[in-house]
Length: 159
Image 1 (tube, rainbow, N blue to C red):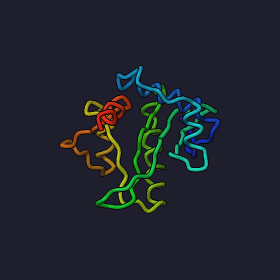
Image 2 (image 1 turned 90 degrees about the horizontal axis):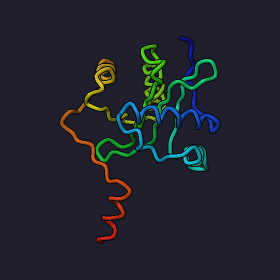
Image 3 (image 1 turned 45 degrees about the horizontal axis):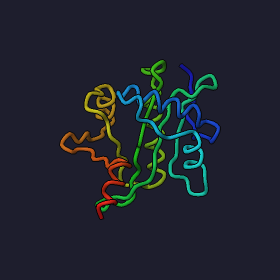
Image 4 (image 1 turned 90 degrees about the vertical axis):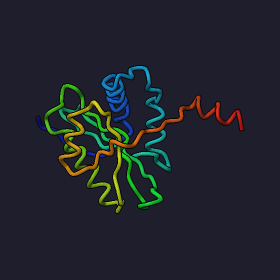
């Protein structure tokens, strides 16, 4: 399959959101996506972008994305967080995921970050195998913690 990897543009956000929805279905959370096209456009392309998104494109259709943003580690300093790497079901197994990951790693290197981190579901064996193959450490003894918007509101109301 012939494809190109490039930084996303504002006009890509409808297709990016389609892939975000596809990921939610894959991760068994089909109703969890709240972000809108407008959110992605405003948050990614305003005066202070909250994220950078790379897209894989074939035949003028976006078939993969990698969305990253800057973080700071008290142990390491500047790091990059890969929020999501998504390849459309119809394009999996064609090297697109690896190409997107390559682009993220090159981008992190260009920024001089000390680490790139991301999460993976414990049942996503193909992804885990890819990450370990490239030399990433899959930290199985850590748990991801989320405090939802409702949880934040409940917490603050008790302060």
